[in-house]
Image 1: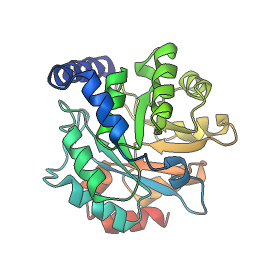
Image 2 (image 1 turned 180 degrees about the horizontal axis):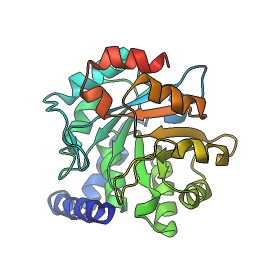
Image 3 (image 1 turned 45 degrees about the horizontal axis):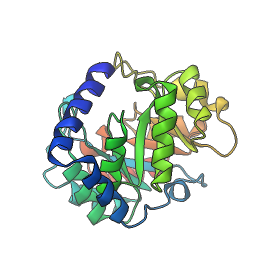
Image 4 (image 1 turned 90 degrees about the horizontal axis):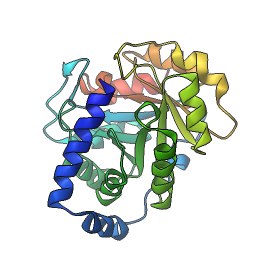
Length: 256
């Protein structure tokens, strides 16, 4: 599944590149206002922080929500106390777009994450040109040389990489990039199976100074509390927010 998602994302990026060449996107990225400091926004605090996700669909769950106005949803997330907004931009299985990210960027003052299967520099430049402050990098989708290359490009553009792992080996590779924001995804992106206890088993591997992010398998405040008790500084939540009253649900999660 992960290989198919990456291949599709690269095909879509190539289509966009034919319409908007690399040099044009590079210039647009350079012209953007500086990225927001996501590490400061997500720094460990007395209570858990939430990255709230704009997510219409997923390969594992199918259709989740229409979300005709991503900017309005993001504004609710900000009002509800989220610390950052994640925007799915993958077009095929998640039904997102860069236009969603641009709309969200214009509507909120929080850091905005491009959630995508990023595997080449053009996608990173697109993210900055659209106003992203963070870019997701999935260790399982990249060899180490490309992972480091993309991580460094994200940093050079003033953004922050959220480097995502699913195994102890992937976590070590994430730390080897020098990343300061590292997530453990409870969902295996090859099989899409969930392991809610994975973060807890890997949390003690984090070195000092790296922000610990738990991703996936969040349906209730109890799930957030479970991650918090295991050492999560930040929890990324998508489905539970788009299928409920986002402000009420955020209130419950932030109180966990």
